[in-house]
Picture (cartoon, rainbow over the protein chains, first blue to last red):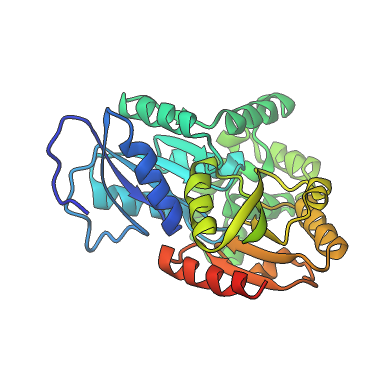
Length: 215
Length: 117
């Protein structure tokens, strides 16, 4: 793995746990004249970051149990201002939203074609964002179907719990006791829920919870 | 050479994978990005290489159908996590390859497996 860059090309570093896939990514991107692949690692280790000045990191994120926001934060910590292009086997729009909210500049499914990956990396390197069209399309359809309101799976797990407890008639203080949170934290959750659902009152959240089968 | 049918949705990875399989003693009869049970049966492979990280219930049922229909078929599952999550009952000989494994490890495991086919 080289430790320094010697050109003005887009300098790319690859984080990919799947060893052979990582090598395939290196080969594909290195063949593009405007890219320079600096190296690859199976995972991000902020305590021992690679000594490279990458412009862009291709970050493999997978698995049901990982904290996407945390992994992206670790990547940002290790690579500074490099733009982050997430590759994932997850096609769920809510996962994409979580990654973008955490600072990812692009989100692509791992079955992306080589030409689309190169197009996405060029787009992101140019300062824009990129989301796999299949996922963006799915999200758009969900939004249209829900009349501009977000669906329950776009609330975080904690927000879903809070909605359920609101629907059971609990006050913020009682919800805090139930979830071992401060009343202020619960209040913040409620504000975010109202904002995400584009509603203004707890009563509407109750209606929403019933409609979505959360209670 | 072991006649191998490959199901691999990650297009970027296919050339590297085919090179690995051929180096391990496989001849490739077909490469598909999704599992089509009838096409597998028509192709009459000795081994099915299956990337099972992007799998829904329908695919699991399709894979079970293939396994049940072709008891002589050897199965090579390529995954990030153990195949228990697939919740299927392989009646065939099964090789599990972990995605984080190095090229050498994969080559060794595949080589040993295909020698016995």
